Length: 303
Image 1 (cartoon, rainbow, N blue to C red):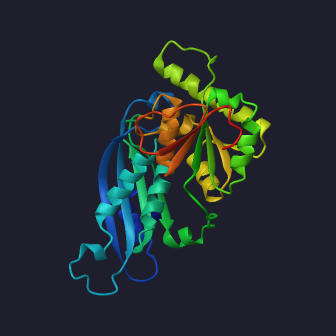
Image 2: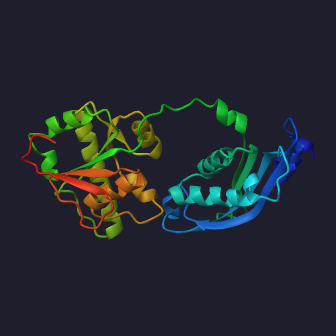
Image 3: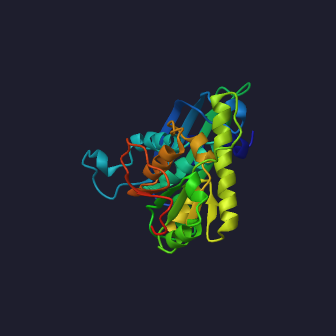
């Protein structure tokens, strides 16, 4: 077996040793860390957990001085476990590749991390281990194009069915879009949407009904765009762009249990993205919440 093939099937620690980086460095590793989580692109992989095995090796810059036996002076292996836990808790993912990239990116934010190998295996899928392995270098992370910066906390506005049918809707949207602040509109589903026989099916119907409304609203108001993914929303908030939230992906991929009621879901979204208040047009918000709220009645022409 050639060295290339041997390294390809070796543990990441062996691959790291066979691929030295310039300068003196140390090596930190995590082996056979097993977590049960819901992940997968297929419908059959939803509402069930499967075991993932994580192997991580990090090339670490050698300390510049005596550590003094101080854990704060090193990159601790606890940070590797924390990186896994944080990314698994952020949202439900379809792909191991996405999970590996995010874990690697989080680890390489550590000041001492030079290079990271991440290997993830699915242990319960098929006959054998199915997995992915990536290598990322801190210099590559630094060389990546920088995203635009700007305000992050959005103004979250819930539009009720009555608000969406109001003659004042265009004026409200124009006023909100003119505030040079990230704006996220969340919508109430129409009353005449189809009814399904099960709660799970109805949830999908309701979410799709909201997304249809979102696209209709954007078609009528070109200043708005639809945002469905974290990447789209994050970009919009960093650039102070006005968007209409298409909620299906974030709701179905959430690791907690988002509210069924769409007014409560608007508050869930506001908390998720760090908004300090939310505006409700044409509907009173739920009583139990931690976000400051303001209510605008449908017959008002000003916000």
